Image (cartoon, rainbow over all chains, first blue to last red; front, top):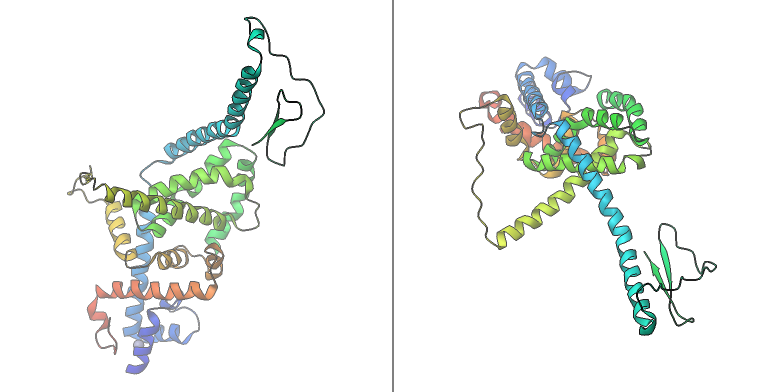
Length: 151
Length: 199
Ligand SMILES: [Zn+2]
């Protein structure tokens, strides 16, 4: 009997909770039902685990759910704004650089107040942006050269 | 297991609503899973403060990624993976910050709980109990034990949630049970007297 209890004790340390409860038709569950000593050990283990599960359920975030939701919405909005900036920021920067280059390249005599930089002529698209990307094409004064900006 | 599965069924309408941009559906979904996400995070990190940050980050990722949830896995399985990934990322960030803090040897005062030492609430007792038991385990053992034995997911569900072979899940589970049960029995030495191999 002692060796059977020793084996049962070892098995109880890893057994499924249903076996600790003595349910089912496994040898261990049957022994738990029949042996008072192993039954007491099993009941204690089950109670300990149930206490631990109950303790875990007691835990709740200190931040209340309404505040957490508000924070999600605020951070979501900030992220969207940032995404917009990071998507268009480089394009805007490139446009500014290109504009500066165009202005620099124009003869000084033409840069009188009120003068406008000639509009870039409408042309057939040179190329298509890959899926999910933007592309900008800048004309230069050298008609054989164009600046292409992928973003 | 019936508990988690039943909840998944009744989540469908909320998920569809939230995916369609209905704020109220998203908020109801969050209310339903808020405590659950936090407890997953506690079990995963073993630290309540870290779990708090993980919960917040998980909600943000839920908001961002819910439209891409295609329903092929159970929602709770998917959400657990989102929580897990948030926990792993925040843990890396926190570890980096701590290394930096150590490098500059910056000392901050010890945080004092405003509730005071003499006020021992049920929540505090629960927190201490969870900490005492879970701190014995490795991160993996904590996760598996929490999901299977405390929350009622099957080992098959958990192997999907953790992307782990079922045999590995069981191995972590058995080691976790053994460590926790030895601790439970350590408080009742009279129960184990007479066994060949005592605790
Ligand atoms: Zn026995």
